[in-house]
Length: 250
Ligand SMILES: NC(=O)c1ccc[n+]([C@@H]2O[C@H](COP(=O)([O-])OP(=O)(O)OC[C@H]3O[C@@H](n4cnc5c(N)ncnc54)[C@H](OP(=O)(O)O)[C@@H]3O)[C@@H](O)[C@H]2O)c1
Image (cartoon, rainbow, N blue to C red):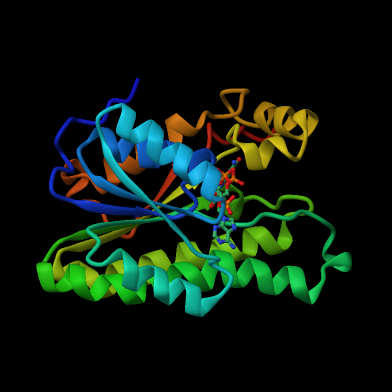
């Protein structure tokens, strides 16, 4: 059950990228519980419509918008169609794993386009409106793996490290105008994307946390909703750790 305060997002429009699955879907639901009008973004219209349906059935307001975030023109069109946005959650991402020696230019470009350029373009398009209104919250979903080498994760994690850094610089540029920018560094979380990697991978990643398990999307969504809310009014430029704890060496 979500701990999000009802009505804390009343009158606010929230754009959640990658809300057709996993963490993004849970964030969309949590913000809707708090009263936000949620733009559910993704590419898969069937899952997008299902997410909108689940939100509206529980009394919330949502609509679906599709865009391929690897295409910069589609990202700009999404921002234009969304209109004024008060809460932007840059959640959508690709994660492909493999040895660096076998990495392709195509995979590198896809990670950087989807995981770094798209959030940057969305922030650039939507932050000026927030600045004008003197209010706004942007949250980038990154990974706890940024501070730990992850075998096979070189390109994916590098893209998230870039997003962590941009989070701090955007926070610095926008803070004086009342716009907060934070990141949530998620630990291994049971989502459809992770599930595609197989149970063995998920369970071994879960065992590598202090809590000894993977997280649930709703547990990450709680942190995101808190950061998006006025309850986190004095937090900006933070990369909040939600990774189940880092085991001690030795
Ligand atoms: N799950 C974990 O263990 C974990 C750990 C650390 C960080 N994270 C981060 O958490 C976020 C969500 O991960 P998840 O596991 O919930 O992901 P997921 O289940 O794989 O879902 C990915 C979402 O991103 C969207 N997406 C991917 N590429 C896109 C593109 N080119 N254009 C538009 N949408 C695109 C997908 O939309 P469609 O399917 O509709 O196209 C989908 O909604 C990501 O930023 C990920 O890096 C996850």
